[in-house]
Image (cartoon, rainbow, N blue to C red; front, side, top):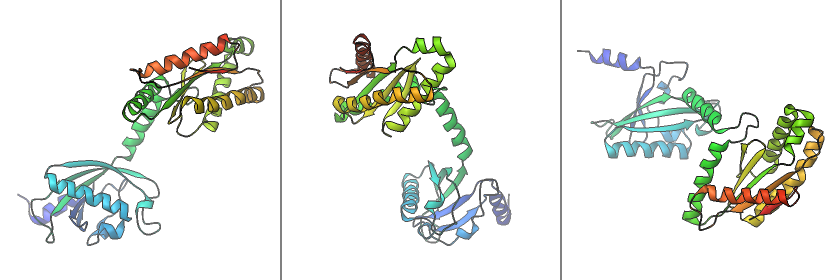
Amino acid sequence: MFSQQQLVSILSSLPDPAFILTRSGRYAAVFGGKDLRHYHDGSALVGRSMFEVLKEEKAQWFADEIEKALESGVLHIVEYELSGSDVKGAGDGPSHSIWFEGRIQALSFQVEGEAAVVWVASNITDKNDVQKKLRQLSETDALTGLYNRRKLMETLDHQLAIFERERSQTSVLVFDLDNFKRLNDEMGHHAGDAALVEIARLCRQHLRQSDVIARFGGDEFVVVMPGTHRGDALEIAERLRERVPIILRENVRYESTISGGISEFGRPDRFSSDVLKRADEGLYLSKRAGRNRISAL
């Protein structure tokens, strides 16, 4: 139906690049990639090895995926990131990270004496950015930028599974702002919102990068501390309790404190909500004892 020249012309017109890659990682041919919004001309790669072009670790990853496609004989699909740091030679790679979907199919014939695959690379960076933004919107609290209740429960479920499997401990802190209603009544809801934003900022600055911070609702916050026993978590919470009145005085012009409760996973726990309930009981124990304190249960 088509001549060889016409087939080559059709392949070369494909918007996404199609690489013919041998088992050893040599670029035997490159077709397509005509969508210049997303791709550069890859013809200079022909005849070169991935190990000449890419850093060792990245080139080996590509080689491993080629081998998987050759062994399975069926379409192999992967998502991967490529950045300038993956490419040998300063300035040769992309200036920012690019995400691709790779569709890899083993060929039924050898190329240059080797088994080979066709690897079609589709730029999915824009799609990934949209998905990331949607995920962030679904997981974060609009006012404070902290995680929301949905993400919190997902995190607790994950940490409980780790605890059951590895006995790696996780502690949970629940705290809220003392007399928050009075703040709203005396200074208005904008001041109440400002106080919550300041507390969120303080948490991000002074808690550990591994800690997961969430706004549970209203003025109630939850901090999940992986790999932390209750005693160590109490020390962290006490430092937070001491700092909150300072930032509220300086930035909101209001005198207030926080009260909280701490607990850790236990062997009887069947649900992640069990540890949250105990920490919440600790919070109310602190309230009954006069506020401005952290109780561990």
